Image 1 (tube, rainbow, N blue to C red):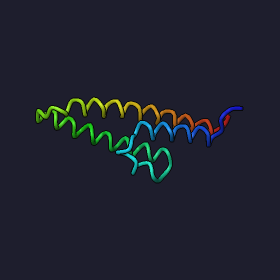
Image 2 (cartoon, rainbow, N blue to C red):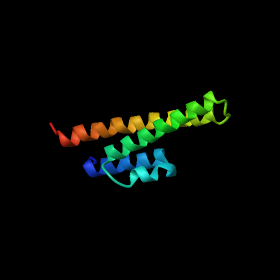
Image 3 (cartoon, rainbow, N blue to C red):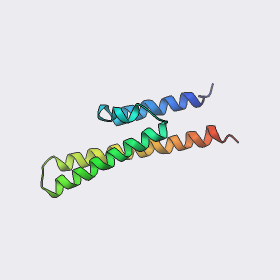
Image 4 (cartoon, one colour):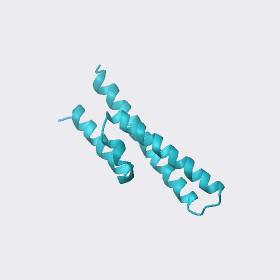
Length: 94
């Protein structure tokens, strides 16, 4: 049996929770999945910006912080792509 819309959405929610981690739990408490993703992406972009500022100030943990933010951002963008596919498939069936 193929997964339905709710199964796919729940699977993406689990992935989002795992990628976002506990620091972003507030972003995951309300709204649709796409809104949660947007909030997390915005927060991670802000984190990456902060890391860049730390690197410019020669703070040692700036580089690892930036690398972590870049990895998290790439994963969140991938989840966003899957969510867009979910919406296109289930909301616009052929």
